[in-house]
Amino acid sequence: MFRRVLRVVLTIVMLATASVAVSMTTASTAQADGCYTWGRTLSQGMSGEDVRQLQIRVAGYPGYNSVLAIDGQFGPHTASAVRRFQEAYGLAVDGVAGSQTFNKIYALQDNDCTPIHFTYAELNRCNSDYSGGAVSAATARSNALRAMWKLEALRHAMGDAPINVSSGFRSYACNNAAGGSSTSRHLYGDGVDLVGSHSLCALARQARYHGFGEILGPGYPGHNDHTHVAHDPSPYWSAPNCF
Image (cartoon, rainbow, N blue to C red):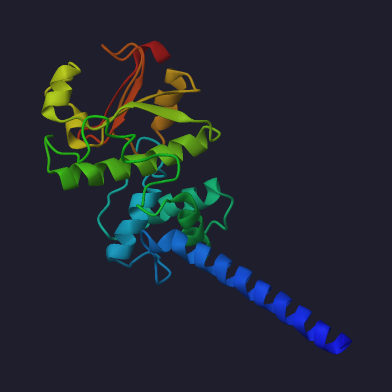
């Protein structure tokens, strides 16, 4: 009788353990499956869509006053960005994107590929589909995603304290209503106005390390109540009151 009871108890324990193991495995893989998974280690000289996806996620680590090209080519600038990403999160620093680097990225992203502290809705309070701007809705949405990963890097560098978005993508109608410039980067999806628990000048200064080609802050006309960051093909930085 005792042996029979013992076998039943052991069976229950084994089933419960297996169930927990399956649940944990599913949760671990599901974190990446909803977005993108890498199937190989990436290093200098390699190219492809997996490199481009990596570049999007490390674009916030290009170095001071630099912008990382999202071109699918793993060159020295990408390797440097990977090294800075690895250093920022306490990983082994070698400039090679392997399992440790990818696992950290998986932990930082949601199933729609956005970083865990920013959302598509947060970067678009104008409409629901990113339409009506200077580029197609798909391009504006893609630009917003790239901006979010840079913002995630900026947030982490500033102690992981919240950074709030007061304005992101704007259609022409929304931009006109806000009194925005006719050439505003908000129309492209990558222009973002920031407020938060940091001073606006601190945001403007730190943003220069995280891949933003346009940074406008206090002292620049119309920017005394927020810091503006964007990807601009012609880099421009102005925050006169921050010196």
